[in-house]
Amino acid sequence: MENKFQHVYEVVKLIPYGRVTSYGAIAEYLGTKNGARFVGWAMNACHGDAEVPAHRVVNRNGMLSGKAFFGGNRMQELLEAEGIKVENDKIRGFDQVFWSPSKELL
Image 1: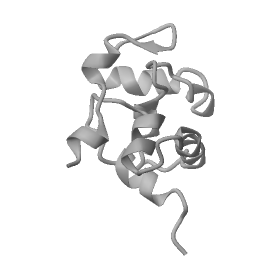
Image 2: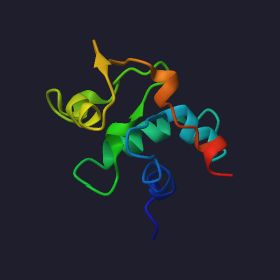
Image 3: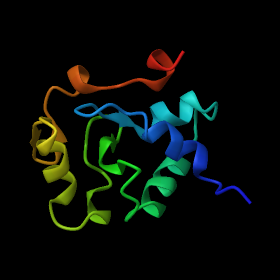
Image 4: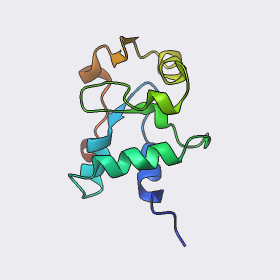
């Protein structure tokens, strides 16, 4: 049986290096506009899967809302390694690094 989060993971795998998206943007792309929480559950469930770059998924304001599941500052470290600037758990220049699956995956 297919993992109920598999569609979410397939979208997350497409987020380009050095870019981020939001839980809500993924949910909207998948046709569940109010499904941001479901996307969050999927991100929490995939930790340890190196193929799913969960660190690239943040909340709609660019906050690292899932950082507790990475332990310490690991989420920030991963983002910064990709050139994304983070200050006080928020992505600086969020609009410039935001990737919209609905616009990019036509």
